[in-house]
Length: 131
Length: 274
Image 1 (cartoon, rainbow over the protein chains, first blue to last red):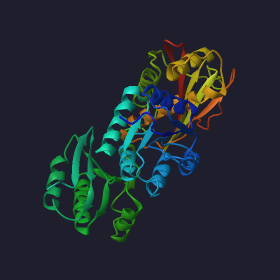
Image 2 (cartoon, rainbow over the protein chains, first blue to last red; image 1 turned 90 degrees about the vertical axis):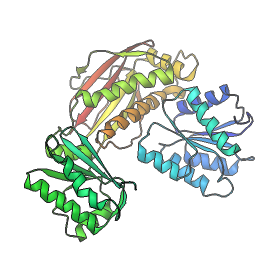
Image 3 (cartoon, rainbow over the protein chains, first blue to last red; image 1 turned 90 degrees about the horizontal axis):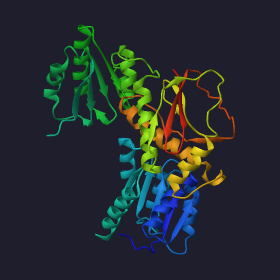
Image 4 (tube, rainbow over the protein chains, first blue to last red; image 1 turned 120 degrees about the vertical axis):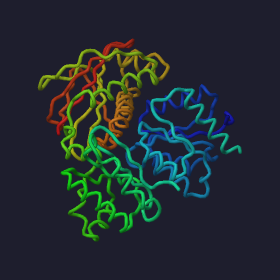
């Protein structure tokens, strides 16, 4: 699993969902969690962060800059392109999953989700990057 | 060799899915394969082009043969999920009159007269009810039970103090789904979702109603779009306050589903206009 000190960025326009994800992360031992209320603010946090984020967990469906837009920005910037990226979404239609995979997402978490479900996805992401 | 087409017989119709690049392979067997299925009880053919990248003239010719055969039997076919490039290709080949194009599989079934365009029937409502139960169970550890559905009276106010609202939009109909919580129920639901106890309303937790609505909508949309409803992505909003009401753009009937749960009662409303 990820080192508990890994800086994690949680992005969601709904404060409730940010709280849910952050709480699960804290329950899993993560101590360095930053929250952003949309993709634009998230990109600002990514580019201004003193230390690069080691994991980004972002909602897909947000106004202005969506999670998919944020993912594409991250993957196209050589400084942060290799950041593990997980999309969280209530939408799980096949074409959307395919689009996310094509854009370089590492895992896709469908709402509603339990702590165990998120943990399992994060373990998969960690394994991928540790390999 | 992988086939670049799949044939899925369904109730009263066949869905033929064309995949990838249709310019080689399997063309010789294609016509016979399709013909094998064109018999009662499958009088209608829907050609789903969602995953079709391009199609050669040879394939178009074979589809025209299928179309002519269907017409000779007074049967019909429709192309659905056709991308603009392909529409132009049909046009340049002079096929735009012969090949009827419509939006989704469901739109084709409506054209064939096999289903109503949309109605507040169990097929439409149940995905929302199932999603409501599932979302509350997984995200808030709350078990709920649906009560008796009833039709809402015109101008009747929402029954809760906090409501999450999301528009149901497709090319052929629109509507809305609303989940409405009395204050005490909402506080307990938020407590279940966030693992904390809440005794009063605050801005901090208010958007939780929108998030619950979003999750319910996402699950129901997935299930309905598998049946070809073509519902589009939408963002939820939250309305709160005692005796609040909504001015829905949907002019059709509204049904209310009362739910009993460990957190108290709450209500799901679904309205539609075709």
